[in-house]
Amino acid sequence: MGVAVSGGWTPIVVAALAAIVVAAAGAWLTALGPWYRSLRVPSWKPPDWAFGPVWTTIFTLTAIAGVLAWNAAPEGRERAWLVVAFGINGLLNIAWSGVFFRMRRPDWALVEVAALWLSVVALILVVGRHSGLGALLLLPYLVWVGIAAMLNRSIVRLNGPF
Image 1 (cartoon, rainbow, N blue to C red):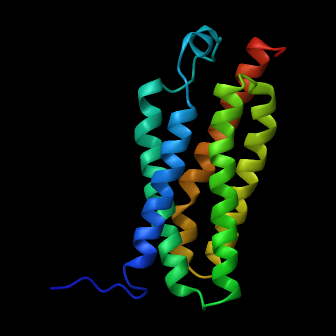
Image 2 (cartoon, rainbow, N blue to C red):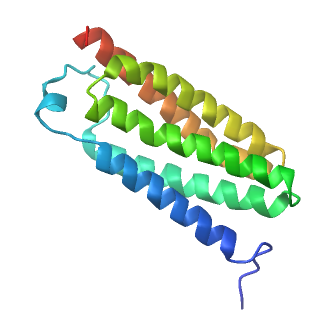
């Protein structure tokens, strides 16, 4: 029995590769060295080992949401909006790691994470026009970025000024 793929395999491959690139770039920018280890963090901070599995799940769900929306969207303008929304979101996702870990500016990262959170809201709205399931699959991403924002804010309050 074959797998029915309405848009062919290309959207699946592109979504998977995009998710891998964003994840790899963010991981490369995440430096858990002495500077990070010296930060005071709130007691409720998830353990460092949990971030990898959570982000892997989020990137998987995001790629699936992208494929669902792409396959349901008409060609042309609607698909272009999907590409723009996912592109902006991916860049903001990567940028947060660079600002927080490489630039060592949790205060600036707090501003950036607000933009990232808003980009996830925009992604949900754009995807939701074409796939209700796709929009629902993005909700864990929104929640996790909200948690990350609260953690980022706590780190700024416990360690600032930067």
